[in-house]
Length: 383
Image (tube, rainbow, N blue to C red; front, side, top):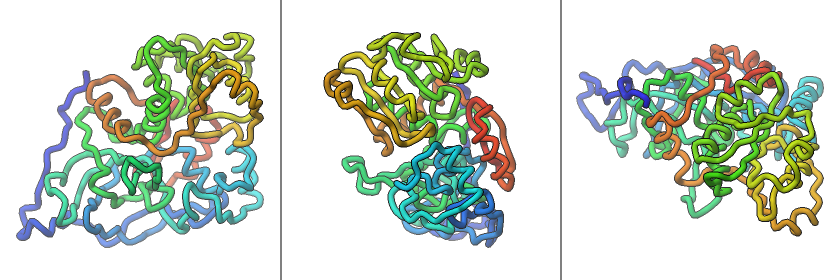
């Protein structure tokens, strides 16, 4: 099990005469941040000084300790969510470098609020709390639940830190106090920062698709952040896991718990047989989507929260309805997802996969390496 030796005790300033003010200790007026100035290539990532956020009611200020790199930050910069984009992320990135275009519908929910600070994954330390927030949070090392449900969990309305408002690619970030979760463990800051987006996305798909023990779960893109998390989390549930990944990464994926790894260029239907899988967890989509439905047994489920292989797919509706399949789209994280992850970490039931760390100012290098897909796990930025 994981030790709690490095859990952080709350601290208070000895010079804080009025505890309701709760000022951050030695907080400067400005901070370094990566500001994304618009849709386009890496030149839209600008390293510069900006004012430190001022917290409001119900908020806390975090000193960012580490921030993970995800597809979503790249896709948001590219405007990939626009209906005008029909290619995979890599192809869209190459096009934006050559011919950048503004896309009004390129964000998740609303027009992307350029210029703003991206960064969905955050491991941070609480340095300031609003007067209506418990000051005992100060000094705690926390993870941020980046997918927020402003209308409550009875509504699917959701907003995302780093996509809809300023995120963690900075020295400081402000967030609602209700969205920070202390984690008592001996993981490094970088290891904790590898968790939020990838693992919560994977846990959300498995939760919503009702993954169960002894089921056969197929995970595509299994060497990436979400895929590698899904392998671990499905195995934790007692599922039999088959993974799809590059042959060069097969051993690493097996080490996560996959019982079988299929090369992404092989014919999965020929190898596994039609109607052999209970649940497909797929963030790749693209030209292999049809094969995924062939693999599903009658009454099977397909869960997706991404389409890095291409968003436009061919769907034979007869295969869909004649087999009584369920297609599950997953963006908004359900209420149990993030608290579950914290418990898994503290119990030692999952492990992080940090492929490499980069200084925050080298974000373009990190994203270039990310798109090469030669790594297993996550890249993490250190402010």
